[in-house]
Every structure is written in structure tokens, then in C-alpha cells.
Length: 116
Image (tube, rainbow, N blue to C red; front, side, top):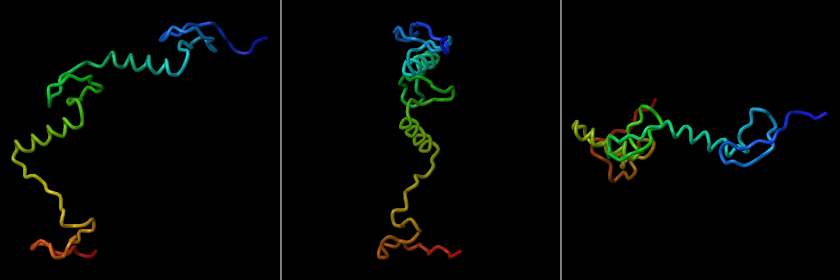
């Protein structure tokens, strides 16, 4: 008496023959299963043009409009310039606690933060 079900099978992805432990096993390894799943997901991703640079990319989500985070950042900066928003400069003269880094270079309008 044998335990379980075993059969000779052929991998759907790579074509290798293997012993399947169950009826529903169609891939020889987790790697083949992962590659086949990725291929199916890629097949259903439309190729669209990037709104920022015009380059083509696979749209992994239906609301994705840019090919990369860098392209999205450039487009956001361009939109801010078009709207006339002032450019925000980092506070280089203050440390992480709101104190002047160099007291000799303290801006004239600086006031110490109020204690809570």
C-alpha cells in the first residue's frame, strides 16, 4: 500500500519530467511556478506612454502614469513651476532641534522655539 498519490508529469513551464506528489501539481519547482505566474501577469499589462517623458513602459497598475519615480518627481517640479509656487529651500542654518547651527550666522529674524 502506497501513501499519497504520485504520477509522472511534465512541467507546464519548462517541459521537464518529474514525479508529481498530487493530481493538481503542474510545475516541477517553485521557481517554474513563479516564472509562469509572472509571465501571465506581464501578459495582461498594457504598454503605455509615460506622461512625463513619453517613453514606453508596462503599466503594472491602472492608475500608473509615469515610467519611474524620477520622472514623476520631474513632472511634479514642472507643475509647481507652472503654477508659480515658490521653491522651498531647506533650513540649512538650523539643526534638527530648531537651533542655529552657527550662532555667528544666525538669521536676523530667528527666534528661539517656545518651551512647551
